[in-house]
Image 1: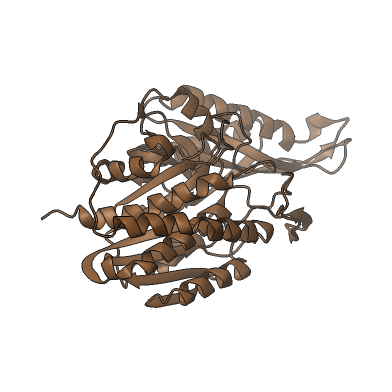
Image 2: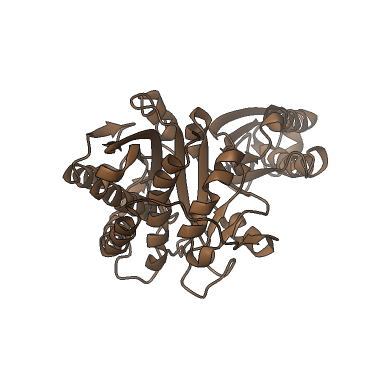
Amino acid sequence: MPLSSLARSLAAMSLVVTLAMPVVAHADAASIEQAIAGIEVNVIAWRHDIHQNPELGNREIRTGALVAKHLEALGLDVVKTGVAHTGVIGVLIGGKPGPVVALRADMDGLPVTEEVDIPFASKVTVQYHGREVGVMHACGHDAHTAILMGAAQVLAENRADLEGTVLFLFQPAEEGVPVGQNGGAKMMLEEGAFKDPRPDVVFGLHTSPTTNGVLVVRKQAAMAGSDRLSIIVTGKQTHGAMPELGVDAIAASAQIIIGLQTMVARQMGAATAPSVVSIGKIEGGIRGNIVTGRVEMTGTVRHLNPNMHEDLLNRIRHTAETIAESVGAKAEVTFRTYAPVVYNEPSLVDRMLPTLRRAAKNGIVITDGPPGMGAEDFAYLSREVPGMYFHIGTNKPGVGPGEAAPNHSPLYYVDDTALLTGVKAMVNLVIDYAATQPE
């Protein structure tokens, strides 16, 4: 899930909230803080281990086993494995009655060859689409998993004072599934992740290449909805010296790509329907003196306004088909939805802002500015129950927004000193949500 647009937007954000907020009082506050501080070494060690042994979507066998063993050792009431292939679910029932709060972390890596010079760098390689590629946690899912493992330990150690129940979701395949397979958050729901117990609310976090320990949250549309785009252009093959005897599928494809960019810029409202259409892969042709009759293009479509989603897809299809027809070719356009818009319930964000401010380094929580166009299948979870998804800055101390490599880069870096901020946020979101229940 690329989030470089988030890092760029942070530099331009106009509101940084640092106001002092009332602290929610808990009888167990001191033991909670002590437990959080004491877990840092373990969280870092888990994160290094997972980082050095990354696994792609639906293949998180080792990672899932590590998580399950940890949850079982904590004595959780329920530990389920093999959910959505390799996912793990844990249920912790507190000593006092209260709500059910779900916490989610994703576990999969990416087909990226690591270039970061660290002792625990990944050396893992796999066969991916017929090519040998490196595997790397280039989006911080190693940190997400370690943070949630740490939060589970802190909450389990304080279960006697815990109000309500915690549902821990360790999710596979956020970055996508192998061709022909199902997976991710949607499949976890299909397999009953939210059925017993059904959560009242769900929280999730994501690392971001911005200021260390800063937390970023946005009401309503927090991240974009995403669709995979496929366009097959069919023309008529001919000799390269006699293009007039055929229909050039490459030339038609080039016009389609330009037409799609013009469509977004001139037909979609920049304020009411911000959207992105990017073609990331194009394949066609055999040799230089043959005009090819077939081109395959794949790309991504992003949107922030659910009400404009169908219109955007219809315009993409119409643009590609009519441009191809105008030169005597044919365009077959298909879409595969990855995830809808990640929606943060405004009242929930308002309710939990004091918690985020206590967790963030120096109390800095950024709440204003444009959302990133990255996508996240956490959106399926927050469509089922009210949800809040936020980002944590994980740059090296002193490195600001836009100064570090973006997510999905072979140089993406997560600084260990930010991990405890994530644990503190997740633990206290559970406690404070229960403590601030309406009478």
